[in-house]
Length: 415
Ligand code: HEM
Image 1 (cartoon, protein in one colour):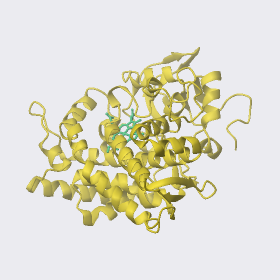
Image 2 (cartoon, protein in one colour):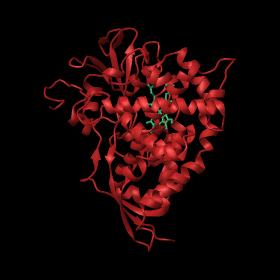
Image 3 (cartoon, rainbow, N blue to C red):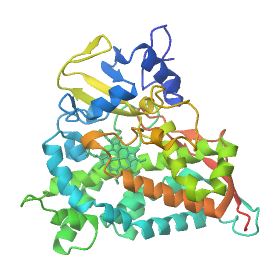
Image 4 (cartoon, rainbow, N blue to C red):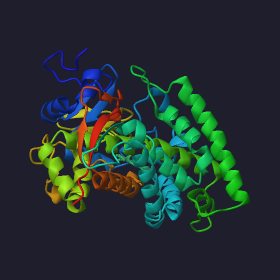
């Protein structure tokens, strides 16, 4: 069923046509009904950049206390048990986030550079086998299955201190946790089961680090202290889960979307591959703007919201559309055009990592991973072609990107 059966705009994130390309509908929402109500699912929607940015900064009105997900089973006041401070408001959010920030420091992220590089090399070595001979050699690989779908979770495991021998299994469980079959709107039984198994695993990891601390993040979380206050075991485990839920699939999708969009613009690809030192970072930022992996966040209204001549009542569920805000023509020139040369000041306005007190704690890490992976790819290959016909998108209400992205790469000619 199309989302645009009548003249009146209807936004239904469960509709596959909308998931395939939500952007024309986002534009209609911004122009025709900037505060929209979906009667069938009973939620409200904000789509303009200014409104989304303001909502993200006002957690007294737009609360995270019920979680941020559309899934009915994740929408309840206990959501913080698995989503930690993402599903809390101030002052509880502030307390846990400041304790976690003692351990999850910019320095710890910077120190991960050799590990991220090592993982990138390992996956690219395997994926490019066959293109390692003469110049012009080609290799075919699936960018998601062979690299982008693996590396972000391995980096999180590396940070937490999960031993190498356990990482494949932890990645399998984490994938089950966030995976949704097409057509399913909620957490499937396999996901619930994986959550229980992971919970047991992280509980054991915590006990081991308490007995014998190391220099990993888990040990640092156990030691973190602000004015005598510490995190208890439940709070630490909820945060470990939050990293998996917030930092795994989102980064995978960023890596996939980056390749998908650049490959569709041969001139821009030539420019990026000729000048990686200056253009890889703008390539990442423009991908985050143009087609961000986390499209929608839910909020619970604590008060009536009156905007654009309508009122969303206190107690309602309201969605903020990050993906729409990033395409708002009121802020971005030619917003539907993918352009790695876009003005830096415009890119500074993207809302892909949220804003306000819940601004993504892992933004630096996600950007670091993307830079290392994409720079290494450019170093090794001279050109990438994406097989658009065989690419498979995930059908998801809020995550945007690919489950499979077959690509052909050509070995770089040595200068
Ligand atoms: C491209 C990759 C990523 C994107 C697009 C992304 C996006 C976001 C967004 C939009 C939020 C705000 C949620 C809200 O306001 O309700 C958020 C929060 C968060 N993200 Fe990320 N994220 C990414 C990667 C990561 C990574 C790699 C990690 C860590 C390993 C991470 C950890 C977190 C955490 C802990 C929060 C909660 C912050 C809080 O509630 O105070 N994210 N992320």
